[in-house]
Amino acid sequence: MQLLGHLLSGLGAAQGAVTPDKKVAVNEDGRWHTYKKEPPGFGGPTITGVLTAGGLLRWLELRAPKTKKISSPNPAVGNVIFTRPNFPSPGPSNARPQCRLSFPAPAGHSPPMREASLEFLRTLVNTPSPSGHEVRGQRVWLNYVKAYADETFSDAYGNCVAVFNKGGAPRLMLAAHADEIALTVNYIDKEGFLYVRKLGGVDPVVARAQRVVIHTAHGPVKGVIGNVAPHLTKQEKDRRLPEISDLFIDIGVDSRRAAEKLVRIGDPVTLTPEFEVLRGDIAVARAFDNRVGTFAVAEALRLLAGAKKRPAAEVCAVSNVQEEVGLLGARQIAYSLKPDVALVVDVTHATDYPTVSRVLHGDVRLGKGPTLTHGGCNHPAVVARLEAVARKAKIPLQHEAMSATSGTDTDVIFWTRGGIPSALVSLPNRYMHSPVELVNLRDLAQIPELLAAFALSIQPGEQFRVAI
Image: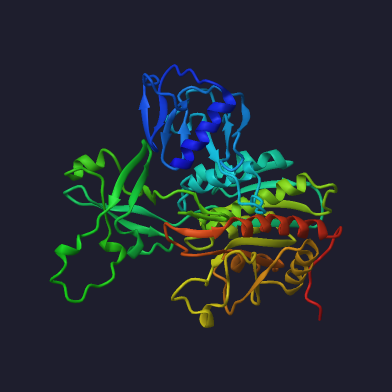
């Protein structure tokens, strides 16, 4: 917070005096307070708006142009980026114009990705997208990628496609799943507590004592997953791990009737933790699995749209649904698109932290680049081409082996129709299927570069076949 105060000092010096009409946020001795006007005798910086968690100023009145960058006189402090989203002010309370603080990287350390891409990733990750309820996240994805596509469309179940170089050949599909693991309301007891079922691989151990949002037809309803205090369980000699049926959500009501006025059976539930840069290139979020994949395929289209030459191939970026509950959307869209070759982007388990056996799970580390998987559904000619373009582009790669299945959409895409040559590109992810998934943003930024390089390497009419 002290750094934030210094930053706003730089803002005041660069912009001049701010004359607020409504509320102001004021830093006094490192503590933030809000006032209707600047306090008498206060000589420090003020800014129109209200400070919220995470260093975000939610504006009540925007005083900057659509895009403005104000640099601090002290380059060791940082700068402020103003952005005004494309909606009328004031708009809904969660969608007002925002001011985000941008701190400088250490000397010799370049940002892992451009600011607009990072904002897209942040919005994509923070937008709830439970399996079978992906609409909100799909809208975010389509709104971003349409600027780089010849056409966009969605199918009956909400799989979304953005096509670049329409009519090219062969047809390359870049696929990633849009959904996140979640819960769904299954039963409401007479005291108004909600019991749940899983949407995907939710771990009941890490779900307990978490804040949640129930997504209803009438808007979000806040709640918490209850957890019995240790003081009340001392008599239990053998404390067992919780099952999903043990989880209950408390929404602050005292009867079934009161609960049913707010929620209904089948409403999806997500945990509340959101995107945050932890330190340097390391970021943490609830749902990197697999919003990082849909981010990567969209960014690949952006890179292709800005390339000096167009690819020979038609490139279809796909954000498909319901992977976490059975690889379902990928089956649908692979069948209907009929791609000639497919690259799938997903997360993989990083194994560079305590208690994980590298003997069993391989050696995969954050900061060492994306991974390629060998064997099974991964076509050897496609994998070899990915390795070749990575070497040429100086993109570091890590390698994984698989036996029967990869546990990703690649497993169902490769056997669709007569067999689609496919390969899996993965982002190392610590603590998968938890509220604190951890990834390296530089690893992530290298994936769209690899996908775009692969697309540009394809020759007109090229086919990928196993040499016999």
